[in-house]
Length: 208
Ligand code: ATP
Ligand code: PRP
Image 1 (cartoon, protein in one colour):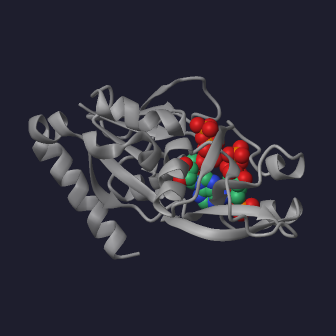
Image 2: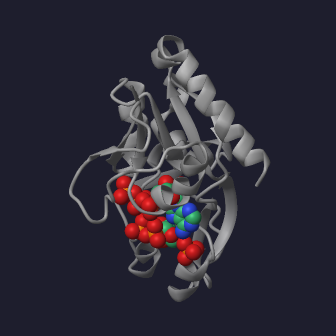
């Protein structure tokens, strides 16, 4: 049995066509049923539906053999404990700093609101900027508007959310896409099944 961890929403929607080409089609619809373990058209493959940020944890501990997670989440989790063999090139966006469009470029100590605390720490430390990082769980764009932070670190795709809140993108931290991650022990114990799935996905991606 192979268990693949996927988060509901954007990544699930974009992963479905990829998985389908590898012969994996969920039997249940997570939007319609409350099931967290989904059977698929392959008797030997289950999907577990969890929060995006929990995917690396499930895979690291072997509760799932594989998972699909955004590079943003993997960076923040610290993904040394996982194999990351494939860039699936889905859920693409950018991890950026952003600030109010009229805000000056801060040179001294700054306050940064983000849910990517470790990544933001690493980024500003790497630039030699003293940053106080304030952890938020969502609506980061609000922080500069209400004086909570000078800038934010968040995902940007179309830029519409920033624009709607009078913010502008400033510096690119990293281009983000979703990656296939694999538990290290599973890679050895279930090598044949995993290698064959990786091979199918790789071929599908090459034809895209
Ligand atoms: P959680 O519910 O655990 O807080 P989330 O709300 O971040 O997770 P999603 O919004 O579905 O969950 O995002 C999942 C992943 O999709 C992110 O980790 C990122 O890699 C990618 N992503 C997020 N926002 C965008 C976007 N606007 N455009 C493209 N990809 C995105
Ligand atoms: C993400 C991200 C930004 C937005 C950027 O939020 O946190 O707010 O997308 O996308 P844009 O540049 O196309 O506007 P999401 O839509 O996932 O909502 P969330 O805050 O509930 O995660």
